[in-house]
Image (cartoon, rainbow, N blue to C red; front, side, top):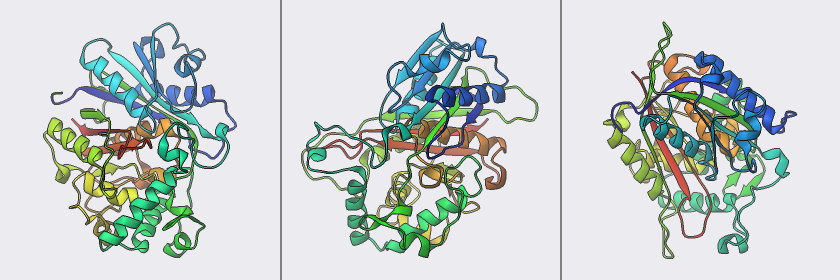
Length: 381
């Protein structure tokens, strides 16, 4: 991929909320217009518009583009479960790197309130879904196994949620902006043992967008932000035993991203991690190389992943506090990376950020540890 495949020149996001009064299209338009304004880009100069959504329906990008003058150029829509937005990003970066576009807008969006309440719907043709397995159940099994095989406790799971909510309280765009205590988390409603309500990410409505360009931004005083690595892959299918406490896919994508960027875990100051459930964050500490297998719980217990710690994980609140509008998550992670590097993260700003790794994964399918995973490394340049 080289030193920099493409540049992030602007970012914008709606607030993530339980149920937005705005239409799906209006949410997307708000994020796109905000990103373009931040990048000082005229939407008429955009070559490519890519929209990632899990549940937005057909021609989502075209519907959004119609109201803001983006129609008439190349528009592509992507669906890849929780990695839908990250998949849209990869397509845009490839187009920039291949010289097919000079300026692209990438949008991630979902309005999950339209689906009603409860767990997200999965394919009824899947044999595990037919047996009643849903995502909280999957992560419940992961958590039970992880707690049994390591020194982790339910209090460590609670600590993930406490950190997320503490960071979310500093983020005006987060759905959850109230800090909680360990006792609050452990006394919240049981969902799937040992997971409790505050250990699980809430659904949300929201949209986030970035402007990706072939040349770096030249605005005086604004750091240049480059995408140095971007890797997207799918899990390997197996009918046999798989270790639920590890993500082979996340480990593989992270290793390739570090290789592309010629950097390592020790070079990251911030990580945006797909903490759909508290146990996931502990697992992904290990997948991303911040801890040895089975040792991720030590990082949350020691405070190493706090803002100001050795590696600040999810300073924007992560999925647990910010909320999880499926298609938007991978892009808002990139927005947070951009804001952290450019010093625009407000009271949650991590000092001296030069490198950020983002990790977005998801999709529950029988035989796969995960359906899709995207890892990017974003750097000041």
